[in-house]
Each structure stands twice: as structure tokens, then as C-alpha cells.
Image 1 (cartoon, rainbow, N blue to C red):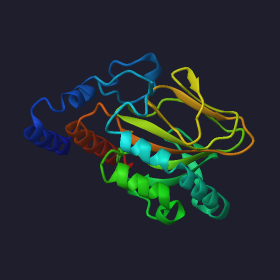
Image 2: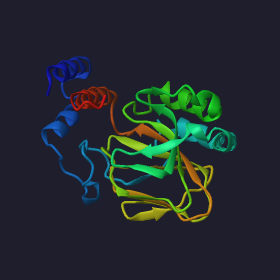
Image 3: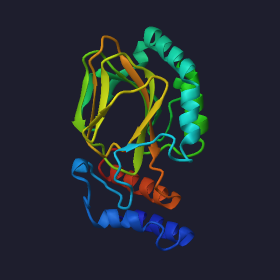
Length: 250
């Protein structure tokens, strides 16, 4: 632990109690820690969180406004996304996952690098507004990660993988879903229902496919896992930011 992290952790414990970030400290001490076999590829596992791959989108009061806001605005979001795909394709880019870069997986970012992507306010204004008002301004989004439109071209497949940690959780709004598309999380395969949200813990192994004949697009939002506390979130941001800085990734 660096002096900077020690100072931040001491401040959090002074404000919120000596045990307020005990799980974060345990995660650091235990290295890879105890985990489900299908989380083996994740780097960090915060102990004490439910080992549940699939979550109910309406199962958490904290997330309800985000889910309802996205679903109720689906029609406008889909229309604006279609216009952007047709007339502003240059704003989409190959998706660069921490494991790979994929040309048949296109992304249009709304939130990245700890802040909103302001150009998206004019490109996809409804999604930008909903995200800002209900996820960013309320600090429900995990600032370590991102939100983007994720478009899988026909025939594209996302290989099985685990994402970095379990203390954030992935919300998908199904924006434009042709037949032949599927997502598998912890060996359970589901399909998106257009206009509805899916929620899952992406520290579990997951993959996706588009076996249809047109692009599949979801709006992805990386939210804090609802079982994490505010002191833990503050500590995790400081910790991961420091690690990225030391690794030259910041």
C-alpha cells in the first residue's frame, strides 16, 4: 500500500468508522481471494458480495430510477442511435476491451475516463441526458469504468472472458436486437428483450453472439454493485486509480 492510499484509507476510516472499508483491505491482503470457479479470470474480488451471476434489474431500489429511465426512453434512444449510425459513423470506434480490440464490435461512448463524453450530448441526446441525470449526477455509475453503445455486427462473437472485478455490475438496455442474438453468463444463456434491461455480474465468465443479419446494439452502463457501501466506493476509486497510475495506465 502506498503512502497516498494509506492516507486516503485513514481519512475514510476516520469519517466512517474503523471497519468501514474492512472488505477492501481484506481484498488487498488476500490477493486473488476466494471466488467462484467461473470468476477465476477476474483480478479483484471484493469479499461479501452475492455470488450471483444474473441479477434482477428491478431488484435494487438504488438502480430502479436508472432502469426505469432507460426503458421508458427506449424509443427515442433507438431512433437517435439509428440516426447516428447512419450519418455519424466516424464517432463509433472499434471496441478496445482490456483483453483485446475487436473491429466487429463497435462502440459509441457516453461516459469514459471518469467523465461524460460531451460530444454524445448532441449525437445521442436522450441517452446522454438519462445517463447524466440518473447515473452520473447521482454517483451510481462506477467512475472507474464507462457507458457506451455496444454494437455487435452480424456474425460477431465476444469470446468467453471475465472482467476485472465484482464491485461494479453491468446494466444492458436492449436498444436494437435482431433475431439470433444471445448472451451467456456463467454458462446460462439468455436473450435480450428490446426495450428492457438485463443486469449481471461481469466478473463471472460471459460471452455474446450476433448470429443475425443486422447489427445488435445495447447501451451498457457500469454501475456500482448495489451491495457496496459509499466508503468502500471511495476507497476503491482511490485504490484502482493509484494502481493505474503506477502502471502508467492513467
